[in-house]
Length: 596
Image 1 (cartoon, helix red, strand yellow):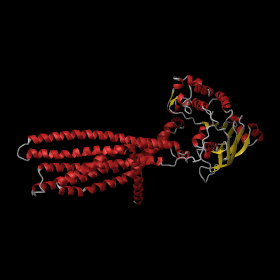
Image 2 (cartoon, helix red, strand yellow):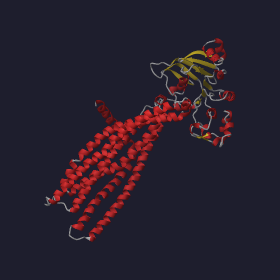
Image 3 (cartoon, rainbow, N blue to C red):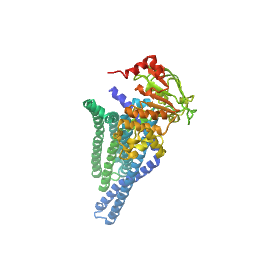
Image 4 (cartoon, rainbow, N blue to C red):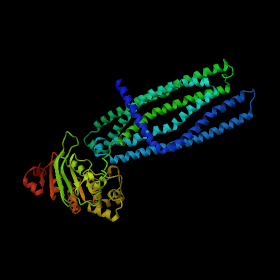
């Protein structure tokens, strides 16, 4: 019970913070909100005017012993006009609320997507991509549904409550006060239920994100799943997460579904009580000031009924809004997570770097208690080829991340052309790097768009020249639409080697002063690799190059080979020098050519 109370208190604070953020998104569109409120007021006033007119019509039929056709005709025309204007204003209000909602959610999604671009790599490494997708897409959609319901029903519901109170007080103050006195019961019940439903709606959103992540992971690697016969195990994992989502959804739905029947029950009791009281006032106490005509009693009972309806609508809104708040909270959590440290005020831009890279006594670790790179020093002069080799987990990829400043060093410094990279704008720093990774990435679009990704204004001739240098032109021309061939999802219509050749062509098109080749030829056959190596030789002339390789035969022409082990450089020198030493590098090299 204490745990539940604690969760409830935390959820209240969470909701308050989330509401403040939502109001901040609404503020730029306050003009739409004001106009929506005015339309809601028109709708409510005219809707509430109709019962008065109907009551007058009843009295015109029964009040004088004969029908007042002239007055009745006028009343009917007024009712028809009120209904038509109400319908028009209600339609305009719905159109406006839809636009307002989708503008707010559009802004939320845009900010979330933009924030993803500035999230540090450490955040992306520690949060599943499927969960992030769920926050940007599904949770934003859930928030949209709740927000739209709030704008559509909350405004009219609150105004209807205020309006009906006013009309009831004008008709019979005593009975109106009886109705009002019972009002807090409905609010208390709705609040109690919404407090509990919010907790489970939040759990539901988290479970949905977990399930989305697993589905995304399985679809992206289905071949591997089938290859290792992991279908049954992945299905069990899916079933477990799906069951967790189902249980949290059922609990959230259970609590939320209690709201409407509970408030309806209370409101029915109030309505019946008013009916009995009204009959007593009409027939047992017929003195002036208390007596109600049949028409006025009809109007009053209509208002009592209308007075109860907003409670049901507001209860539905509050229930749905708990889901919306829980979903919005997950999006805000991501948006408000720390982004990459802002560039220093005195940070400079380097437009034409020479490419001298200095790494001076650098220490780095992802986790403080587990040192990875210790006292690392490298000096890479322009035009030099630096190869980095070593066993898995020795720090090769980490070093690349430090060069690109995806992570900052713990101590020491890395400099480009003598300038500490922490004093260089990230965008400027990364413009001076060209990168070809082992894990290829191609965006959905044409081959042309992918090659020109880093240089959208490239000419046709430049693009084709880059593709020819990467030995990609021939296979591209054999594709159905050549350079205009659409790359399917996950580039399923290309082989692994073809994808890598396109990535190489992308770098060839816009050659920066520093190149990073991380197993860049790992998916290419030996014959093509030889041709690519020649293209790389041409590409690397006059440029500083860092080459990460497991196949040591590909780095024999490197100017310097750095042999890393446990975050330290244990050997350094040319291919021939290191072989002659007979050390760790020599052992690695010879092991790749040992007979089975």
